[in-house]
Structures are given as structure tokens and as C-alpha cells.
Length: 251
Image (cartoon, rainbow, N blue to C red; front, top):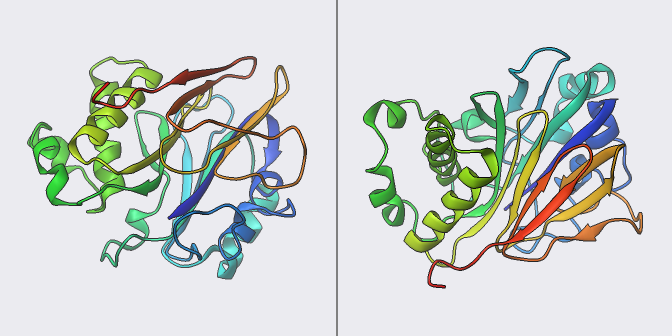
């Protein structure tokens, strides 16, 4: 469906994480090694990053495949950041929203990506959409399942929930409304990475006190990569990683 990656650590160029590794996210756009659903991620891409002292991230998103965008290649070579999130997209179905449907989505200083699909979309999500205020529904920039999942997370954040709690509760809520959904979410606020493994692959490369990388699949063959178990909430800072089991809604 998609591939995504988030990084926290000393400032690096975007390319260090996204274009330069032997099995980088860019290569995963046409040759993923561990993607369970779909084969090519050419329906859009995006990257978000944080500048020092600014809590609001910058973004660059486009509708087409990442490998054909020379502007992005230049950005990746020179832009540096201590925190970033990037994604390449394989759309579940054709949509008219273009780059607006490409991750990362953003709001409240947070970057968001969804690897997976909501089962029975859009009918299965109508009851959850009805719980959101009209003003929040009107803020949706795309009509895809990922955009609505992000709106549900953002609603909880704006109500005061901590990032890990907002993510965990949203995953359980969507899984209950649409059983069989794949809900690998990836978020960062520039200080913390929060992710879920729910129906697809998720990997972690962490050197406490140095850097943390969370990704759909490893970008190289470093033996320090560890796969995150399914039905898990991951919370990582620059110094700690916490893995918390997520229970099925019926449990």
C-alpha cells in the first residue's frame, strides 16, 4: 500500500534517510522488499521536516512517482533536519485529490502517515466521520481513508490527549468499526516518534542517545534492525523506545 519512514537524531540531510541508502525509500517506491500488499508505490510521495527552533514542519508533496522529481532530489541533497517523516504512496483506488492525498498530513505541529487500508471504505467509516464536528470534516484536504484516520487522531490531540494515547485509541476505534483494516500509522512532532504495527510490516533501528529510525522496512542490511511485532504501539524519543501491545477491540 505504502512505505514510510521517520527519523529523530542529529541533523542530517533528507537524502541521508530517503535517497542514499541502498534500499532507500526512493528505491522502495519501485522495488520494495517486504511490502505485503501492492508492488509499486508511484501514486504520490511526500516528506516533512522540522527546522531548528520552529515547531511547525515544512513539507514537500507531489502526485507522481518520487523517482521522476528532480526538485525533490535537490531538496534531499541540501535540506537538513533533526526530525523528518517521508512516505511513498500506492493508492488503494483511484482518487481525484492528487498531492493532497499524499502523506505526510500535518496539523498541530505533527506529521502523519498511514500505511494500509480501511476495510469497507467509505461506508464502514461513516459512523466515525459523523462523530467529528462539521468544521473538522470541512478541513479535510483529501477524500481518502488516510485523511479521515488523521482527522480522528487530530481531533483527540486537539482535545488534549497525548500523542501515543490519541494514536492507540484511534487505531482501536477504526479497527472496531472496520474489522480487517490495516492500520500502520506513523507520526512525529519533532521530539517523539509514535507508530503502530497493525497488519503490515514495521521496523526499528535505534541507538539510544544517538538516533532512532522507524520504517516500513529496513533501508539497508544492518543487523541492528528489529521488526516490531504486529498489534504494537511504538513510542520513541532520542533516548528511549517503548513497545506496548495493542489489544483487539473485542478483547
